[in-house]
Image (cartoon, rainbow, N blue to C red):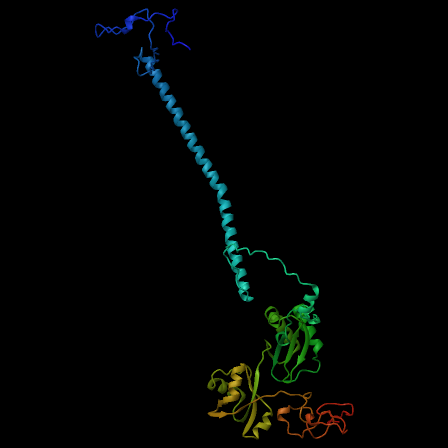
Amino acid sequence: MGQREGDGNPLAPLFNPRWSEAPTSPDDTRLEENSPSPVQTVTAKASVSAFDREPTTLESLQEEVNALINQNKSLADCYKFLLTTFQALENNMKVVQEPHIKDTQDLKDEHTTLTSEIQHLQRLQGQPPPETTTTPTPQRPILPLPTVTWAQKAARAPSAPLPTSSQNKKHPTSVLTKHHRTLVIERNGTSLRDNSNNLTIRNAINSAIKKSLIATIEFTTNHNVKLITKDNTPAISVLKAHCLVIEEAIRANIPAATCLRKDEIWHKVIIHNIPTSSSFNTVQSEVQDFNPGIHLPCPPQSFTTEAQCSKKSGSTMVLTIADKDAATKALSSGLSLTGRKFKVQKYLSFGLETQCNTCWAFGHQTSVCTNDTHCNLCAGEHPAYLHTCGHSDCPTKGKQCLHTTLKCSNC
């Protein structure tokens, strides 16, 4: 076994008995001069500043103070430099970030505008607006597909109709009607001169506007002139863009022209027994003043001449009413004129090419026909729906059969 240090070791130094002796006096706490100290002490270096020690001379103190002042100035300059640098960096960051912030805001505004336009278009088409929430939809478990044979599918599926030719064709673009392509040159009712024809008037107007916009020319029964534009050329646009030059061409080629206007759908009615002492202007003002909602865009017209009217106490006039509802009201309630209430009838326009469906003659309407009824198949004196074949074994009735020989009642 190992022995403790100093136990029975003849080479160990002798214990100094003086350490264990009690000091004879309070001051006797020092060790012997030749004995080593059990505690090693380290002396700290004293930090001596320029203000702690006594200056040797005034000049040295002044130099140290100046050095400290210069050191503080350099620190202040460094602080100012750092502050200026940070401010410059901050301004640079603002300059760099502001365009990005503005671009981001512009993109947000554009996205909002496009979203609102899409929703508006979907509402017009009858589709529900898209959901703005982005909640995740729960995923359904994928089920195995049922095993169905092609024979079962064919037996269960209905026969699909074959696509028709109308479905394969694309919808054509909307074409303007003749009414929307017509301009009317109103005249005072006098006849046109003999050298006036469709080609002369059309070429004169197209030369004036320097474009081939007018396609055809038509003359009305009251000697007005209709200008019909090309397909898909609105008459109102031609009137707005070339009104002055067209009017100049009209003055040079169409005498007694009063105005140029767009074609309007007017409604004509007939009023009977108007006193011949009332002029056309008097009748027009009376109708408009005493019948609210009635507007006559043009003076009334008479079926007879002034000489014939002078021999009668009353005459029949044609009134042109601008509004359809006003014309319907006049037909049902009549019109107030010269202190009396007059009945109104619907005006039926007809010409030499108008054919009646009752007697099959030309020149009048079916509603005013007073002639005998004729069949349009055999010219017999019976309506067409009562037409029968002369053969007893033919059941055809009211229409043409193999035994029918067509005949015209006019011929």
